[in-house]
Structures are given as structure tokens and as C-alpha cells.
Image 1: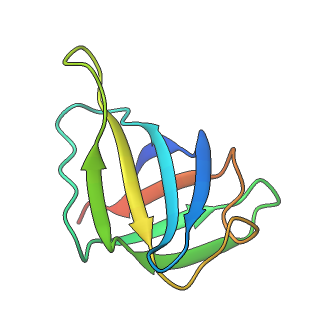
Image 2: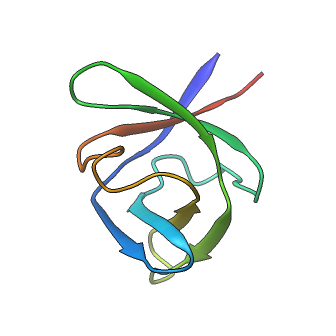
Length: 89
């Protein structure tokens, strides 16, 4: 079963590192780790499967915004407004 973790609110490319996607975690109990497989559902309905390559928490204590590093993808591959899911099995 899929669990939606956030909507991509922003993204940017860091040369030599990869694509960074950011969004507000919807469920405070969600735990993300490097290597966790994710599924991104684009606004056009197509999907991309990838893995988390790095994580940074960048938020005040009241809410949780994650910055997730994705290798081998570009901003065009994962547009703002895409939904990010993990498998919760």
C-alpha cells in the first residue's frame, strides 16, 4: 500500500550532487532514510520510481519540511506539484 509523504513544493539542481526536492511531510510519524524507494506521481499521471540518496531536515520544530536528494534525475523529470509516495508494506 502506498503512503503519500508530500507534494513537491520546490526543486533545484546542485552540480555534482543531484536533484533536491522539497515538501512538507504530511504525516509526522513518517520516517525516511537514505536508500528508501519512492514513487513520484507527476501531474500528467505518469510515475517515476527512484531512491532517496540524501536527506536534510530544514524546518522549525512546528512542522517538518524535508529536502531529499535524488541522483540521476532532473527538474524536468520531477515537476513541482508531483506527489511523492513510499510503500508502507
